[in-house]
Image (cartoon, rainbow, N blue to C red; front, side, top):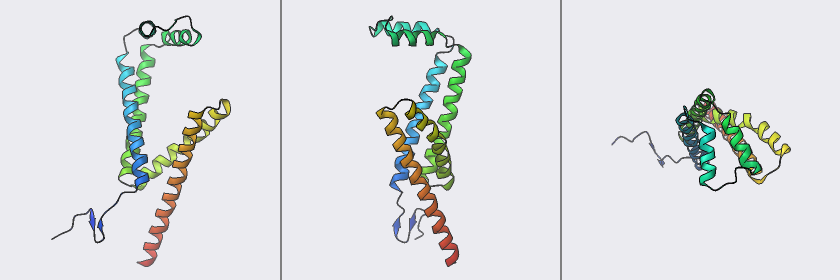
Length: 170
């Protein structure tokens, strides 16, 4: 009987659990950005300021409160072209996150490199935000992204060493 591609002589192939965890995070992130994109496009041709005012009233927020007033003023500045740009940007980032998640789940080198590059590109911005205002969520997000970055660097270097050893042995 022929063995399938997923079966090797030592049994079924096992996934790298950390890569699967990162892939799951990236896929959930892509779903979140798809929801943001759909939400932004559903607000096209609607008065966003009025919608936020109705929401604040429904939630019994004081519209004269400093933060609520700020949100209402900013929401009134949102127009259709801006909503379309927000939707397009959200869908683009969702596509990138989905590609990262699929590449990591399949344990493809391109997925690891893509995730490594995108994670590295956000690290300076996250550090700048922490120096601007230190909060626990920002600190936790930075720690997670640094851990992902270090793990992916190690995974890629281990993969290169293994490939080099296999070529030398052949």
